[in-house]
Every structure is written in structure tokens, then in C-alpha cells.
Image (cartoon, rainbow, N blue to C red):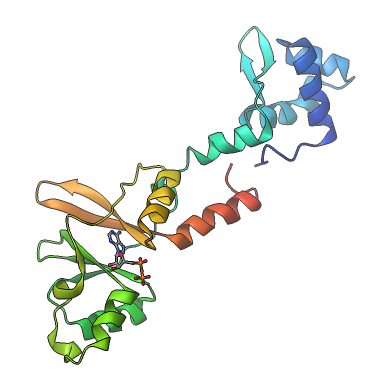
Length: 213
Ligand code: ADP
């Protein structure tokens, strides 16, 4: 699919015709360009899907008046956590700091979500939390992670319907790298996903590669 900012010559022409004459039927646009309606159909579809034009049955096409950057903003504001979330890596609250470090390496993640026996979120462990614990003189195999983790209710979470933009604001404001994606249950919050700064970077890459629309 085509991103709103990159229009070809013919699409620019169509846009200008609709701007000047809308509402206007596809037939009339085709006449003005000496083309068939069938030839124009893909361009009209692209312009409509990208949000430049709107089409009303029996009335025709009209210009929405939105600029490329407004359209881009509209699209960004529709991106939801469920489109970008990753699989969560959780650890039990009673495992040792040593085992949590091993899990972090094996699973290749920077944040572990800590759950209780009922698989409910109780805390978060970051790389620095584990490094800090490692600076002490204690035996790492004997300290359970619930001693050192950041605990509920101070955990920043998100839900799969949340907007990526809102989660990005939380990551920046709280100065954290990741938030668990949670589902509400009667026992508490169940971890169903992970949303990290890497997922946020993917949004930027998709935008740059026109892969979002
Ligand atoms: P690091 O500590 O490795 O730089 P973060 O910036 O993500 O990683 O974590 C900073 C601190 O915030 C840590 O103490 C961590 O436990 C805590 N933290 C991380 N993620 C969350 C979260 N989603 N909610 C609350 N606290 C968090």
C-alpha cells in the first residue's frame, strides 16, 4: 500500500481536479484526464484509502483538506499495542537473582516480568536491578527476586487496545524500557505481552518503509 506523502503525477493531478471541482464523479475526473474510469480506479482507491479523498455514493469524490503530515498523524494515532507487542518473558517471584540473570541471557530480553504462583503480575526486573543486586556481597543464588524487583502497584502497564503513542509517552515519562501488556482478571493483572522501546523503533521503521498502511 502507498503512504500518503508519496503521490505520483497522475494522483497529484486527480487531487487538483477534485480540489477545484469536488464533489465530482469518477467518470468526470476520467473525462478531464482523457482516461477511462477503469484506468483511474486504482489511483482513486489509493487516494481514498490514504485519506486525501472521500467518496460519497451518488455524489462523487471530494477533497478532505488534510495534508500529508495530518494524515500521517491520523494513522499513527490509530496504531495499537496489539499490532506491535512481543511475547512476554516472565519469571516466578521466588526464583533467585542468579536464575533471573540466566533467564535474561537465555531469553535475550532486557526486562523480566515477575509473576506469582497464580501467574499474576507482581513486579518487574530490569538489567540494572539485577546488576545492583550483584554489587552486594550476598550469594545471588539465595536472594529471591521479589526482594529486589520493582513491585505492584508501582508497575506501569498497558493493554492491547492502548495506542502506541500513549505507551511511548509512558516509556519516556517513567524512563523505563518496557511495559507488560496485561489483561484484567478477578485475581489481578495477567501478563499477555511485552511492549518495549524496540517495538517503538519498529513503528518508525514501518513508517519509513511505507509498510503501515
Ligand atoms: P534499566 O534499569 O536496565 O535501565 P529500565 O529503565 O527499564 O531498565 O528500568 C529502570 C527502573 O524502573 C528499574 O528499577 C525497573 O525495575 C523499573 N521498571 C522497569 N519497567 C517498569 C515498569 N513497566 N513499571 C515500573 N517500573 C519499571
